Amino acid sequence: MRRAPPDHQAIYNRNAGYFADRRRGSVMERGWISRFAEALPPGGEVLDLGCGCGLPNAAALLDRGLRVTGLDFSDRLLAIAEQELPQGRWLQGDMRRLNLGQSFDGILGWHSFFHLTEAEQRALLPRIAAHLKPGGWLMLTVGHIPGEAWGHVGEDEVFHASLSETDYRAILLAHGLSVVDFVRQDPLCGLATILLAQKAGKAGG
Image (tube, rainbow, N blue to C red; front, side, top):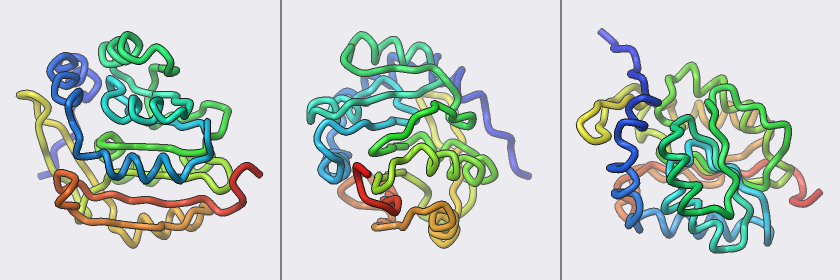
């Protein structure tokens, strides 16, 4: 029997200090974050969905001169982000109701998007597409196979879900994005599975 997802907001609030300490020194994402950043225009605007404490990804993007808006529903993690990275813009909210009234050159959902159910992911992907500028880039971590799985943050169990690569490609294509790369369980990135896509159109247009 499938279990309902837990209260991730409460879990990340409860584990905010632990999570921030673990994320602070993480380097495994460096190659992918660099690739994402290099695809964006100088000074471009990035939306970091489920930004957490902003470490290390938003920090790396800010260091490259990009303008970062971080969205997360954990007020305790956002408080850390605001203290550590005051040059960023930090918003509390639920990505499932994404509606910021602006578009971005890049959208990142690193180890956050996959906490949503399959149905929630299907509903959110068109919203994400609508928040991307023409030529904009999307990078998500997803599951290497479709279905549901469970992990841990501290001693709390957290939920993960994934569509198939075929489904991701089809949904994104229907909303103007083409998948540029889909790497399953990258051994250089903690076995994360990364989806990189670009929206049709000319960047900056």
